[in-house]
Length: 416
Image (cartoon, rainbow, N blue to C red):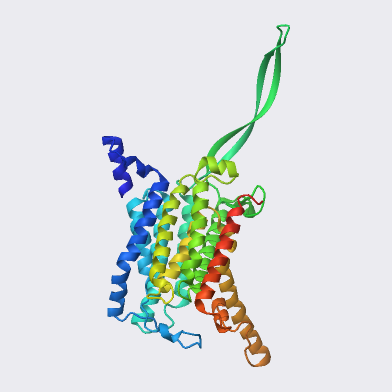
C-alpha cells in the first residue's frame, strides 16, 4: 500500500526520501523491522489472551524429559507469525507483483488449514485434530493453484538467452595504405521472455531442466505434470515442517536459514546482471520476493522471543503448516524446488524417520507378531531426547545443521 503512495509523492512532488521505496533493499529492511516489532510488542497481549481463554496445549505423556511441564502452554501462536508476515508485506510490498500475490495466498491458505486443525484440537477437544485427508485436500488445492498460475499467468516468465550467428566485416588499413576487409563470425545473445516449465537442477552444468521434455513438449501434459510436481512439493514440505515442530524453537530455528537462502536466490534470480554473471535463469519480478523473505525472517526471529526454551507459546499447526507451505511455494516461484531436499534436509530427515519407523513397525508386527522399532521414538528429534540429550541441545544442533545445509545450497551456484 505504501509503495504506490510514495511512488506518487516522488514523481509528483519530488518529496525527499520518497524515492527510497523503489529499492528492494530498503523495503526489505523495513519489512524485517516491522515484523520484529509486531511480534515483540503484540506477542505478550496475545499470550495473555490465549491464557485467559484457556487455549493451551494438551500433552500426551510420551515419557520425554520435561514434557509434562509444557501442559497448558498457549498454542495457536502461528497466528502471530502470520500477522507479522502479512502486515509488513501489505505495507511495503508491491501488491501488483504476481509472486507476492501467490505468497500471500499461500500464507493465508496454509495458515487456515493449520488454524482449523488447532481449533478442532483445542475447542472440540479432539487430539487428532483435522482429519489427515482434509489436510491433504487443502494442500493439493494449493498445489493446483500455484502450478496453474506458474504455467498460465502472463506475468510469470523467464528470460532466456537466444544466440544467433552474425557476420561482421572489419576494415583495417595496411602500412601501404591498402584497405584489408576481414569477415568475422560472431555470436549475438538476445534476451527474450518466454513461458516455460523449466526448473534448476543443482550441481549440474547447464542446469536447466524442462518438465515439458518428459511429455514430448505437449503443453497440456506439461501443465498436468508441473501441477503434480507442485502438489508433491507443497504437501511434502508442509508436512515435513509440521513433523519438525516438536521442541521449543526447533522449527523456527531450522526455518530461518532456509528462508534466508531463498531470499538470496530470489534476489539473484530477479537481478539481470547477477543472473547473467552466475548463468542462472533470470526471472523478472522475482526480486520482490526478497521483501517477503525479510518479513518472514523477522517474524521467525521475533517469535523466538517467546518460543525459545522454556516456550511461553507454541505455534501449533497454524504456524508449522504455513511455514512449510510458504517455503514450498517460494521455491517453486524461483524455480529451485529441486534444491529443497538439500535446503530442507532437516524436514526430510524428520519425515523419513517417521515413515521408516511406521513401516518397520507394521512389517515386524506382521512377521513376528509384535512391532519393533528402528528408532527409540519418531520423529527424529524425539529419538535424541529418548537418548537423554536435552531439548535445547537438540534444537541448537538441528539449527546448526540447517545453517550448514543453507551454505551448501548457496554454493550450488558455483559448484556444477
